Length: 131
Image 1: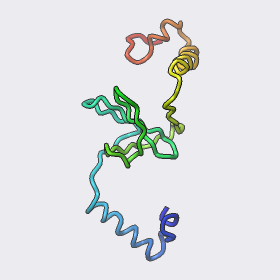
Image 2: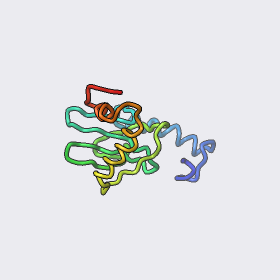
Image 3: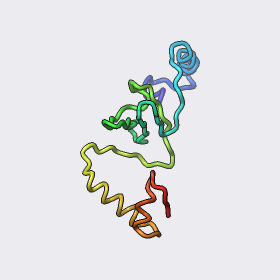
Image 4: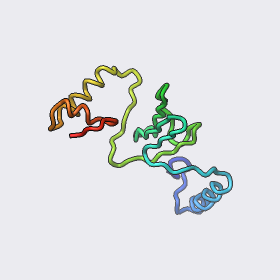
């Protein structure tokens, strides 16, 4: 990354100086941020932050009123989330058909559970019964 942006390699005199000065500048001028995993919940503001794990480094800010896509780390809320090696990149579709999404949820999840369908529906989060 250093070479891409500056043309210097880390083993050159300029590259070594850069790597010595950068941490010092971060300590002097930077702000301490909390370290979160790929998901963070702010209960006080009813907000969930979810890392989309995509090449654009985007996170979704989910509130009761809206879903906002923002940069991971470069956002007004100061939220930085880790990525997950176990999750494929996601693309948020603001104009997704909610009825089609519900149908897919039933087909992909409920349709593949080994228990009766009425029990499978009750196994979603917030339900007291699970298969």
